[in-house]
Amino acid sequence: VYGQDVVTLCLHMHGCRVIQKAIRCLEQEDVSKLITEFHDKVLAFIHDPNGNHVIQRCIQVMSSFAKTAAHNDNPDLASSLSDEMQFIVDDIVSNVESLSTHRYGCRVVQRAIEHCVEDQKNEVLENMMSCHQKLVVDQYGNYVVQQVLACGSEAHQAAVLETLTENGALLALSKHKYASNVVESVLVHGKPRHKEKILEEMLKDTRGEVGGYCCVVELAKDPIANYVVNKAIEISQSGQKERFFEVISSSRQELSKSPYAKYVLQRIAKRDK
Image 1 (spheres, helix red, strand yellow):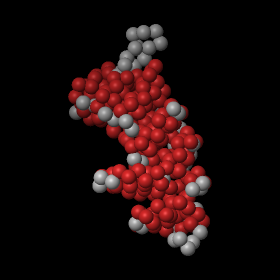
Image 2 (cartoon, one colour; image 1 turned 90 degrees about the horizontal axis):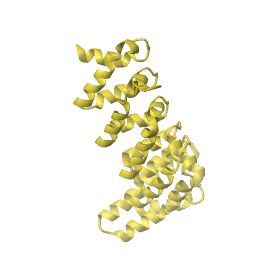
Image 3 (tube, rainbow, N blue to C red; image 1 turned 90 degrees about the vertical axis):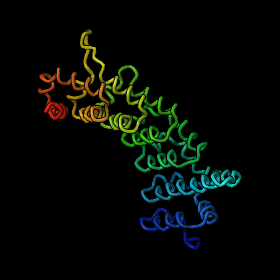
Image 4 (cartoon, helix red, strand yellow; image 1 turned 45 degrees about the horizontal axis):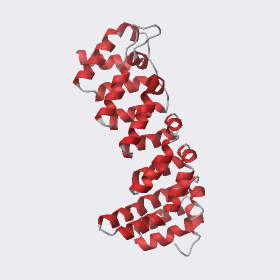
């Protein structure tokens, strides 16, 4: 590997696989030596269909080395290994919004959130959270936000939840092609109290007020949001599940006029049998 043009290999369809395997299989000292070739090239690699995989592998392996050293009571080595890949983290942090909305960049940001040691992970998260509202509705950014829900701190998860639920935002976001993925992610992977918050928002009914509506009924009629409703019913516990059944059953006539609500009505019909 050292005898080759490493940068050219990283950007080549087959060469990038050789570099990835080297990073995965070489001893720690050799990997540390290899990644010095990537200085000032991180963003070029990330934006490349082949090079981005090399950066993902660097993050995964170097972070694993650092965590292993820390676990083995060698904090100096752990710190040194983290420092050796800090140049990658710095480029991610400085460009986190543009990378999170990029086809390949979003994968690298996700790997950083998933694998980096705590200080580096929080560095990425703190910078990403300043633009997470934009990412929720982005074609690629929504996957980064889902990774925050899986790996972020309580504060980061709470901030995402607030974005999804404040000022009645859940109705529009559940109907959105990309944001609906984030809503479903909370329902599937979120903490119990976060799921509870989403479910309660869905069950809100203001039909007695001027311009009021029942959130879950409106969602059930939508071509995208009906999937969110089905997932909500699936994961809800006995008390809330009954409330979903009651609201939907009482609105059966209205829902029967929508071609998309049939999926929710079918779930209700199965339960009634």
